[in-house]
Figure (cartoon, rainbow, N blue to C red):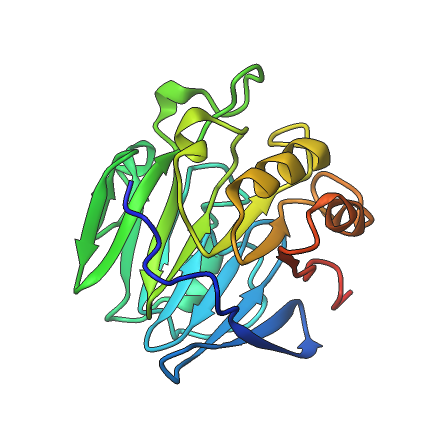
Length: 238
């Protein structure tokens, strides 16, 4: 797995901006002068806005944006592959990246786990996403997470997963980690993983609506080492 390219001796500058509608926003001021805007919607739905606009697992999107350059899907469950939300964000130029379980759905790139890919110069790794002792996300379904390089930072969107050997091999700067339990890691497991991973920033996802109380975000933050920045976004706009 490709290592992160930036030294962590310089922490990324960031600023919170107010929450509107059903998402909350973080602005990251990058070392080369760019700005990355991160929006977290419900469940595991994420929007990254920099040089390109990229969505991951858009779910329950309320507005008609039609601004997506790329849409990445981790797996085929309804709260991750939401066709109504995809219709609200895509346009005639949007490219959709999906795993093998969605091969029969509209897409521009079909991906498998634990590989390196590129599309239009956008580089990313896929990491298998699965449960170890739970039946909800079997390894043989070939679900994936994405570790994507954007303007010299790696962003790891884990998908619905337990802690796995493949996830332990990832090097990244900003990690979107599921904490809700039942279908994914729980708070303790997620915090242990993040403390070992040592990203610059951890953003907990996959809690607060379908599974897991909103209070889990603060519980997770307390368990993460103080040298890792935790941004809690789910629930702030409710």
